[in-house]
Figure 1 (cartoon, rainbow, N blue to C red):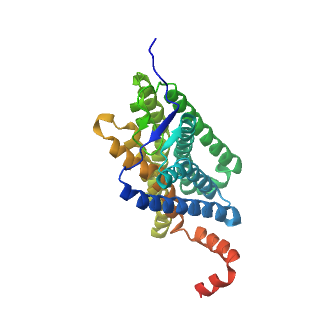
Figure 2: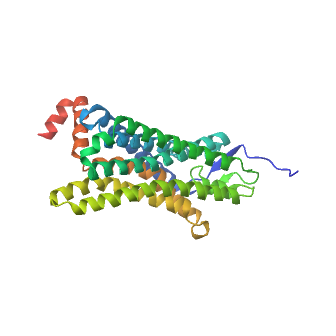
Figure 3: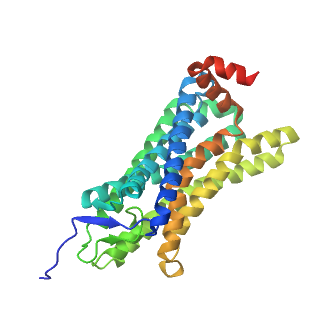
Length: 316
C-alpha cells in the first residue's frame, strides 16, 4: 500500500504573486463583482416589477441573471477576500463546493441560452402560434430541465474529480477550483477522468449549441423571406443581444474544456477563466439591457420610486 497523505486543504495561487498588483486587482475585481450584483439584481427586479415584461423571453432572461449571480458568487467573493487578506487557503470541502456550484450554474446557462434561442425561433418563425407554443407550463418545464441538467452535470464532474487522490502538492495554479488545474494536481491516473470531462462537457455543449444553431438557421430563413425591411431589422434586433451572449459564452467554454491540453498553457487557462467566471456575468445584463427600451423603462420606474424628485429633475 502506498504511504501518502491526502490533501485536506488547497492553496489557490491566484493570478499573480506580485505584491504591487494585489491592490489594483482587488479594486478591479471588487468593482466588477459589484457591477455584476447591481446589473443582474436590477434586471431581475425590473422584470419582476413590470407586468409588461412578464413574457417567456424575459422569464428566461431573469433566470439567466440569477444563474450569472450564482456562478459569479461561487468565485468572486473568495477571490476578492484572498486578494484583500493574502490568505489563499481553501478547504477540501470548500474547494469541492466552489467547483460544484460553479460547474452547475455555468451548465445551466448553456441550457438557458438554448431555451432562449428556441423562444426566439417560436416568436419569429411561428408568431401566430407563439402564445400556444411558449405557455407558462412549457417555460417552467424548460427552465426546470435546465437546472436539473446543469446540476446533474456538476454532480458527475464533482464526483469524477474529487474521487481522485491529491497526495502530492496542494498548490493549485489558479484562482478557483476548476477541472484543468485539479486534474493536473492529482497523483492518480487521470486518463479516465479526462475522457469523462471531454465526453460530458462535449455532450452538453454539442446538444445546446445544436439547438441554438438549428433555431437560428430557421430564423435566418424566415428573415430572408420577409419583404419588409423594417420587419427584418426588428427580427435581427430581437436576436442580436442573444447572439452576442452565445458567441462570448460558448467561445470561452470550447477554448477552456474542449481544446487539447498540449495546445495551451495554464496562464492561458487563467486568462480565459477570468473572462468566463468574472467578466461574462457582468456583461450579460449590459448586453441585454443597454439597447432594450422596455428594460430601461422598467429600471427607470424602479429608480424613480426610490429617488423620485432627483430623477424627475435630471430627466427634464
